Image (cartoon, rainbow, N blue to C red; front, side, top):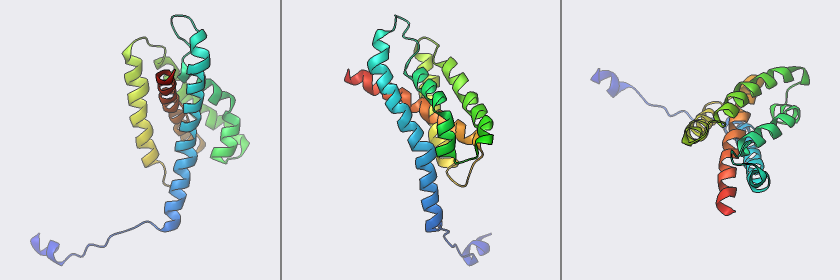
Length: 165
């Protein structure tokens, strides 16, 4: 075994610059832009809508961002996913696969929603962004990636707005 290690040559493999540019573009389109959309909607929701709600504070900023993402989902499918509109149903199923459980998690009172909806989805969003940025993805996966980004962004945007108000 030592003989093999001594004679073997290690050749570093680097991604081509075009691949790197494509990966960065995909990260911005599918990871960062939905996150920023969620952060802006979550902050606006926390600032203007949450003070008018009753003691249960529902719907919260994550619910508001998911609703806004639902209303904008045909546009997101067309602009971000860049797929034909006949595949929108697959994008919608991916949206629902994340938005419905995430919405249910955020109705749980207490710190459980912060742990599941905030921390868990934040880690999931970061790992998906790093793993799925290579190569094109089907609409179902893109919608999941977008909705996790919107939910996590709304959580952080709502926290930021709450801290500043």
